[in-house]
Image (cartoon, rainbow, N blue to C red; front, side, top):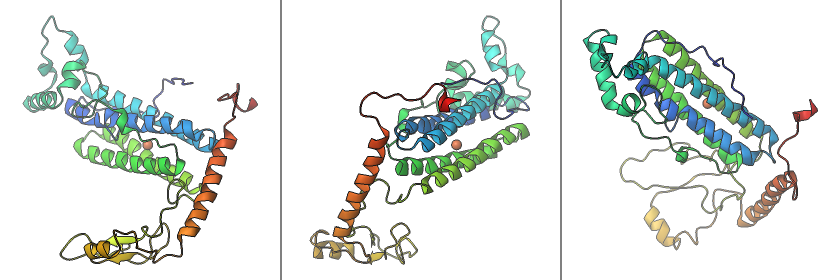
Length: 314
Ligand SMILES: [Fe+2]
């Protein structure tokens, strides 16, 4: 059940209208890394997480709801940045001069420019936010990643928070309004907070690498193919120990020769690892049993009820 609280989570303010920045800020309203995408992603993921991991369900629903609160803040800011435009467009019979509201030639030019850059925002929506990115491309469900596995979904969320954070960081360069900067700083910082929440939640699931259940074939888990000519870079991605499995990276200097000699990798035995095909099979079986039991135990086979009234007998 959702319940609307009239107060915004953060006191969004603007010093003056700025339609050009309103248009840019749409990126965080209906863009791929925006608040609606984040809200819908965590909301959608939460359902499959519910019965095996009620604690993660609780966290995802809380963060999804906070993202909806951020969508509200972004929408409110866009509306305030559009200033009197919606009202002026209503003055159609009198052919009001929107331009007169914007003081000075520079402002007029910037307004005309923003109308041309994203005509949907001003001409189609009549001066309110649209569920699009800053270029007028409609929001899409393809922005939502939900794969029904907490070790996958939580990683998607860490990546989503990183992208949302950097978009706010870039947006802050395009406004000099101290109130708008204050709001963007709050929203950006909440992405930093969420990033850490997802990391902490991921670490409570052990083991969590590789994501999912199957362990990965030890013949192929640590080879680095040198697939370019010229000077080759070396680093912890191709020398020393691999960070997830702790295996020794195998640098394949001449991949073409290697592929031919190993009969297309079929005869490439495991190296740089203690894992064997037998140990992997054993682990796959253990993990399959553990992870499927976890879900099956939590899901009743017959009658099912999502929640109790009231929750926790309060
Ligand atoms: Fe977030």
